[in-house]
Amino acid sequence: MTMAQTLNHLLRARPEDKGNDLAAWLNRRPRDPHSMRLKRGIEAALELFNINVKGTSIFRPHLKQEPKTITRAEYRRRVERIRADVDRYYARPSFSGVSPSNSIHLAGIPMRGVPGDATEAAEIFFYLGQDGYLDRLRKCNACGKWFYARVIHKFSCSVACQQKYFRTSKEWKERRAKYMRDYRRLQATRNVR
Image (cartoon, rainbow, N blue to C red; front, side, top):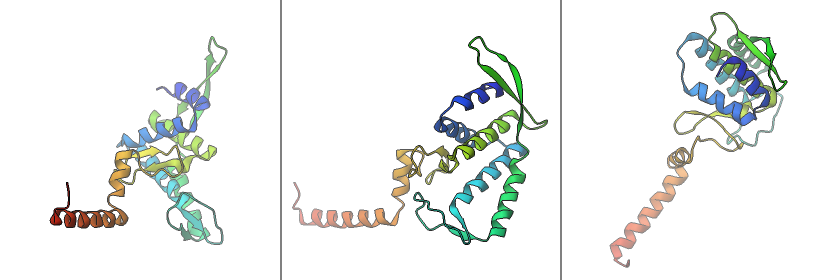
């Protein structure tokens, strides 16, 4: 997808489509330094959703545990670190013409030396942040793969991963152990058909 296509796509796309595009880019695991820096910035920004600043309280119903609390100075330091990682990814808008359907095409010109896909990923990151959907970009609990949560309580990328993660929980292990004890007791008495 070219930069012009991406910009037009972003203007019309649903947050879910944007989030899926960014998750796909993060899962590709690019190894160039620009992409790695952007990924580090995105991960650090997502960590801030699980943190409260001392003296403030934000209601976050999707968190399973109480968020960690940090000082305002530490919060500012983290924001500056994220800003240092992400600020270099921007594209100048450039007018590239009018289509037969009378829509304007914008083409983003990325910074020199920065790969186009990293700039596109940064744009999606900023759009999700502006729209308030950035906290739905998550890593799967079971496999660590990035995904966009369509619903706020989703923490696994698929049903298989959800079940795999649940099977590692203490609650499931206790229930399974009880079931197996009862099953073995029943098999020992031979009161089964």
